[in-house]
Image (spheres, rainbow, N blue to C red):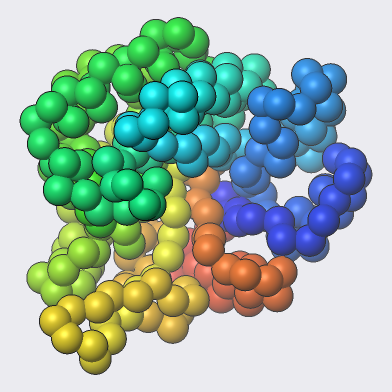
Length: 279
């Protein structure tokens, strides 16, 4: 498999960016510019990836396509289409977003309406619209699981795949985001294996994170540095390895460059311990 993460230090050219990538020993990358960048610059970064054996695992969207504000909603959908068009041009594994939220305050927050039948039907419609506008062949559109919106379980993701019913739709697996209760936390190994068993053929990229149950009542599960939590991350690496040598795995959500150095080194050492080949 291939390991990657974010670049936290500034860069102003493909050459500067590549220096950071190599320093972090990444073999897969999040595409470093968005669709607002000139096409020539997008191609320069794509060519840099091709020349240096870097798989582009993800192009991000991270906009609320369910926003109650119609202008914001339309802009988010248009941006998702533009990002998917770029993902297709540069050959990224996937273009990833979340389904969106009806929360009035947080674009990715909980709202009761997130789980309504009407919202689910709108998720299907919008996702199809985005995919049909681009009709990707090399890339795909995917939705990251979240603790408090669709999909929050591998079974629900499998249903989403069936209901969206588009060849250009794929799975972006973030099993840590779905550990939203003590049962999955306690039985994390079986839960992680179930995610891969149900969704494996459709997975185009993976987020690898760790969580720990806190002492607060009634229940508080916090994301922590890989290796500092309770998830059996070697199980996720073992399952990811079964998907192929170019499977892309990303560690994320750290504030500093040094955190990514630590996280990447930890995961590579974990791979060695369990005889898992990480490029």
